[in-house]
Amino acid sequence: EPEVTQTPSHQVTQMGQEVILRCVPISNHLYFYWYRQILGQKVEFLVSFYNNEISEKSEIFDDQFSVERPDGSNFTLKIRSTKLEDSAMYFCATRPGRNTEAFFGQGTRLTVV
Amino acid sequence: GIQVEQSPPDLILQEGANSTLRCNFSDSVNNLQWFHQNPWGQLINLFYIPSGTKQNGRLSATTVATERYSLLYISSSQTTDSGVYFCAVPPFNAGKSTFGDGTTLTVKP
Image (tube, rainbow over all chains, first blue to last red; front, side, top):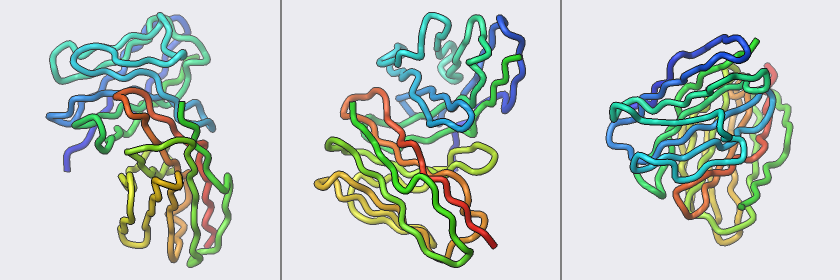
């Protein structure tokens, strides 16, 4: 069964460093999302991406964050200068169409020290 | 935006018991999913159920869109069912989706 793949599964980084989280969507899916979940808290929407541009973003998604799909396969989330409070599980999700089932990756656990 | 409320927040069961988890949402939706977050943090897709009833083994789900709620039934619970169960609804546009706060289920042997 096709699945959304995220790498790395766990990343530890120093405060102030840049990190790039990678997601390989399911082939032929058109809508892409990033979510985060701080330990013990709810899953929060970060950004949605469609037709090679951001379609919506939350207040969490500030100038430190960016997304792109540079090669038509990988969908990446970049955090420019990480803060301690960026420590969380980051999930990528993709959907084939607008009102369809979303498929989530297994997540990347980011720890900022 | 749409508000999603899940109940109960916590549930403790003995192995073999049945349970019902509820998800209420504040506005009409045409898309609803249930997820199980396992102890490793992975979100496992259980059901995509904008309306009607679906069953998968010991789990089933029902969404009554006109009354703005969805139910997740777990029968003959097992210790491996432990974890957090989330429901999530997107709005009509292609943008953000809203997750409930989750129900934390603990199944004791």
